[in-house]
Amino acid sequence: MITKTAVSGIAALGMLALAFPASAADVIGDVERVGVWAYGTPSGEGRHDLRRNADVHANERIETVKTGEVLIRFEDGTTLGMGSESVIVLDELVFNRDAGDDHRYSRH
Image (cartoon, rainbow, N blue to C red; front, side, top):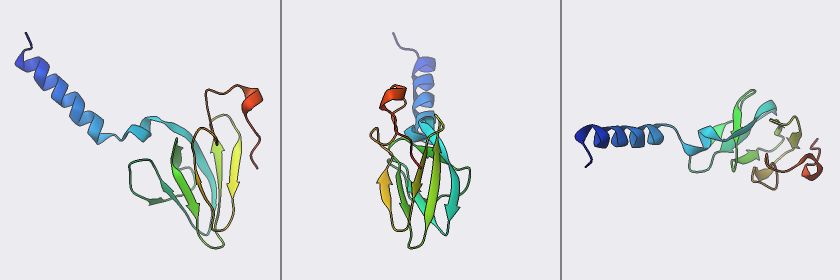
């Protein structure tokens, strides 16, 4: 039989999950450099300015403005550089932490 304490605990865990977006647990790298302006839109969240040292998440949409650029360093040390008016989604084709070294490409 489920007690009131168990129900309260389950409800508290659910509220905690809502307080921290799912993408917060899936950080795959960070922003090393931003020139002019760049934006990030994590899956299921709103668009935000990208700044140096900001985390980037799996499935985040990254975009740069006219004359903008961004350099992202992934957790394995590889980098992705984007130039002016670029858009990419950081899906498993861009970075896959489960892939072996022979399946990763050097991004510059």
